[in-house]
Length: 133
Image (tube, rainbow, N blue to C red; front, side, top):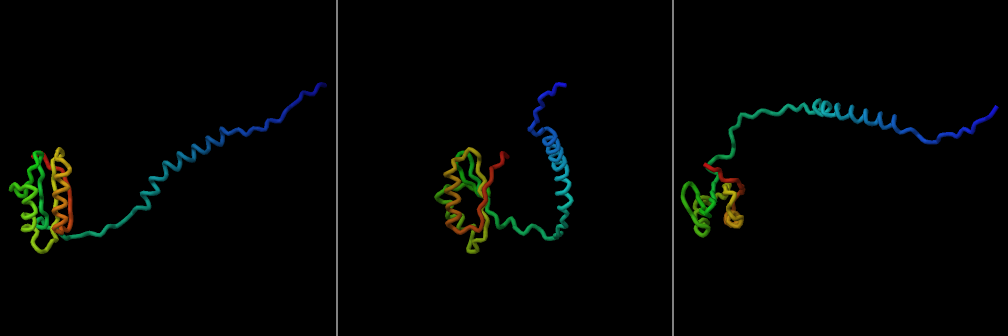
């Protein structure tokens, strides 16, 4: 009888380990949205209050493409805008300034309007894109 030399294979087969890991990953990916939805039941309070920001507290300033600054269809320059804002803001200084600018207006013009409003003590500043109406 001849004995064959048998060597012991010392490598670990990683394929079953990787298969089980991927299956567990898929199970967790499928289950996690369901677990989050089950935990996110929140009863939000109901409110009957009307919008607290009155339209009178907002001053809309339009900065058009050609650099024209308008407030309620009246045209102003950057120089006389400060005087107009002083009159419109009054002594309360709780007004919100909303600057609606055309997308092609130089940013420096918008920054100048913000600087004037901030210097006069506006409560809030907002920026928007001028609609194409």
